[in-house]
Image 1 (cartoon, rainbow, N blue to C red):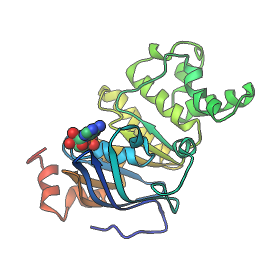
Image 2: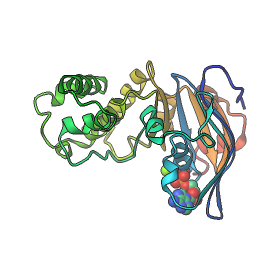
Image 3: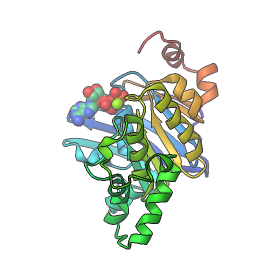
Image 4: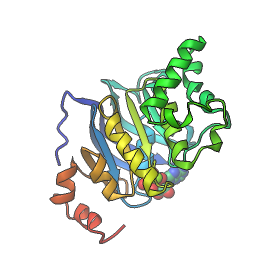
Length: 257
Ligand SMILES: Nc1ncnc2c1ncn2[C@@H]1O[C@H](COP(=O)(O)OP(=O)(O)O)[C@@H](O)[C@H]1O
Ligand SMILES: [Mg+2]
């Protein structure tokens, strides 16, 4: 397992353990995440994928009775120890969920939400951010004539791209995606995958996916989790062609999971 920390690591997770009450959900995770790479997280249901990704911007803090030990170093700062500004952290480490969850507001207001929270008030500046964010997710041409229309009127695939635009609007450097295409049709899924490949020029992306073809299409690194443990982390091509752990091989060849 190649977990050597390089200077390209934006996150460096060391000996991370997490408990929900008595349930030990993450066990001694050591996981560097490189800048401007796509890291895919795979593994059977309940193995801790969502739990892990939610630790990276401390969304996990919303869950009661969670205890963590170890280190989550983000740009060299252990976010578990520092008294840090969580709003600032989540501006820099944005998150997109399984089901596109636009607010029941206009398309424009959804994208402008984050920048407004962070104090951007001037209309021309907001207009510029909204336009750029919608362009970045290849949604601009589809919605530019109806920015004031309700976001909930968009198709599922458009809603998911809108949620990505909403996350991009605060200029994050990391984008976390928890099964972002599992509720989408194949064409919308393909669009999101193409988008991920474009976005990685500028952003670090961590994506949880049930779909192994998706992991192999979009990611540079793949991490295989099993029952709260990180079994193997390596180049995606290695994980899918020549994994070093037989449990990884069992999972990717469909013997379990
Ligand atoms: N809020 C919670 N409270 C208690 N246990 C939880 C909670 N969320 C997840 N778990 C448990 O932690 C384990 C990992 O869950 P999760 O991270 O959601 O897995 P995955 O995303 O891989 O399906 C599972 O056993 C799950 O039941
Ligand atoms: Mg999950």
